[in-house]
Image (tube, rainbow over all chains, first blue to last red; front, top):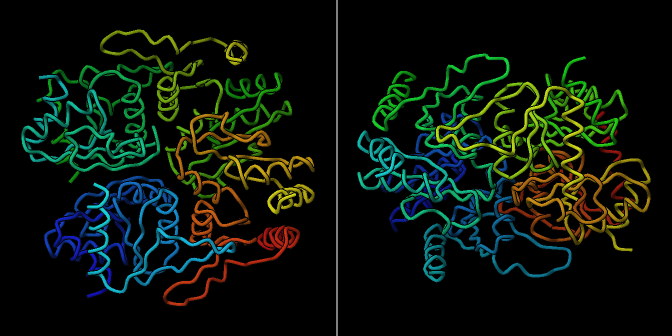
Length: 143
Length: 143
Length: 143
Length: 143
């Protein structure tokens, strides 16, 4: 089982829902993991065609807005878990930090600015379980 | 019970999900009707704040894209039922017809173009039950 | 010269800029008319590819947001002139009325709602010159 | 003169246009620099209000799509120069790299992924002049 699949499974075990980009790769793995544990999966897809959602997405949201949908993903999520190092993930980390949302990284991007200002909203962890535990703690704390 | 609430209830009775703009007025009424019958409600909201969704929305999608979200509503829906005559509804009718989706009107807009070309995708009915029956028939026919 | 081309020419003669959807048909005609008179043309295009702009667009804005760009067109314009009766135009009329912007129609959509409430923001005229004169008067009045 | 202002001035001197987010800070500085040298400035703004554009923007594009407009900025630009280390800038770097566009950094983000795969599209330079020279070379090479 991949890291992303395990993240999905952990989210579902805690009764939380997965919202992701709805396509293949990490997005499919996290949905597959969540479905295996009976969780709810929402996929906000960039294209015009519902059929582009991976088979583990239960609720496809069809935006037709390309990468513009990355912004909506982040706005819809209560907390962001970034898995892996693709550029779409990087844009979501950036949008989340801009919005003041906590981002939990799992083998994801390491960021440093020329000015060396720290980035307190970005927290790297080393296991899916820790990522989801922390995510749920962040959500609880905000309530 | 308002017309919109009845539409929501009829959709839920048939096991279909409601996707709407997620705010107040017609959008709230349709969600309330659907929830009363145990249906699923998705609200694609224009603002940045999940709390703007009406209390009958189960799955809020937070777009922060203003009226740009009307396009996504229409793309996400399998068929469009337009209730009443607000401008947002008119934009959704237009986007749906542009995409070749069937629009079923209930006390909604009457459209005519200067060139008098007919608009076969727009069908006016006179009751929530007829609207939802027709909507489900359109979905079945496309499968 | 088509109606749309004449609208573009009249806009340019008065020193105003054209902002449109940037593709073919009415959008190309209005840009061609404006360029003939030395006017400025901005095309907000729905695709990801600048080359999809018609050759009379001087400033292409590449949105990749499909019909979502119709909303931006309307927000960017000071006043809206609707030419002809396509569905994209109808969505723009709707978005403009929702925003409280004046829409001037030239052989465009006739709208009526079931509730018969009037639509004062939508004004039909019968010539490009009258359309542009009225548009400029609306802009002046708002200043 | 700030770094951003110098970038704007260098762009204008070479006859290229500035397209940016249109607000204050780095965005305003780059527009001010470009205008000082008689260049063209386009501001794609996130809000609904044209008046939010900084005074050096000649052509405001009003999107009302919040951070969704960052995507359009990047799609509209032929090449991206990232100045400084804000989160909006980081999202634009990410979107540009995803699209395969070259990003030239000036005191901006340093990126590293957990997997250590290199990021060849991101090039750090140490002066506005070098940034703009390289940007123009990239554009020429693609023609």
